[in-house]
Length: 498
Image (cartoon, rainbow, N blue to C red; front, side):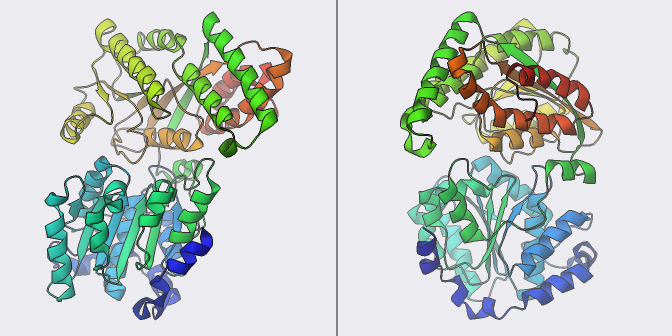
């Protein structure tokens, strides 16, 4: 794969880009704060990038911009959810416009709601983007016309925001050959772009590249991770972690309350049988990619844990004491593993909504991938105003969605993917006026008593997952209380060294 990418990447041949003194640009940027230079561009008409007059970039954002310039216009920013990656990308585009005459900013997002969210941020930078997604007839002629105007010299800058799906289509691919050399491509939530189809759709003639993700490494997909980093460039140092975000004030502090949940007797029996079969599958082939049986068994067990019946009882017990609260997000299972899990988690979504709304009178609505964009925006406004006390969500609130008013969260189901763990917790910590702390309740299923033969299998499977929970507990303002709760699981499985 690496050899293939190197063979077809033609951007290094560009005489315009190869003549840029990147070190000089980095040094000039370092010597002059971008925010201080924004004022000189106030007279520019709409559509040309300029720094908002009220924006003061944080020091780590400035460092990220300098690192990208020093890496010669390529790189991957691994920055915590909520740390302002979008602003960094738009500041880079503004600097490139001012210094080298950047002509096009192309942003690629995994979801439609992120396109509209990027559009709102672009407007703050004086940009008027073309939103190239959904029906090709809505945007193709406009894109074609503006690219032509750009080539003729009658337009100086163009912003295009599209989705991963639209990028792969013939309508968009046919336009890529008309993009000028001075184009910056930004891959938002770039870990998605490592799949074979998406990686092959990335334009090789565009040389200025920036990837954004809190978790650029793809889960159990080293080839996909390599493809992302080879296309966009290496992960730039320093990385910006959740702990960094809290320390710098980019994210709010939080309280963390693990809620331990036991399986019902029938669930425990099924769990033990699946764990035994997982042990047998591991003995035959430990590589997940080569072991379809192992993957299937782990998915089945994940569904069982995610939809554990006692989680609903725990939810009812928790929320009956918190009916006065607002700005609460409820995460159900993601329905992403396969069609059968989608049905299971849809039932969980319905049960959670019934308990909260019908039984307890807590004002909630469901927020899923099937919710139309216009309705999502209305819900967001109702949530922020307090008209809705809570949102019950499945997966679509995991990545990129900006609802900083979230102050409380209850996680009822999650996958073993560390990306989801990081995304969900970072989403809750975004700052908002009047928000000093966030509170997170995490339902964690206690593994049942297991036969000694499969105890070691379960112990090894738990080790990595518990490590993530403990790391998050360590950063909480109630760290000792949170760790004491997790210690129950650690002691049971002799994992106190984890």
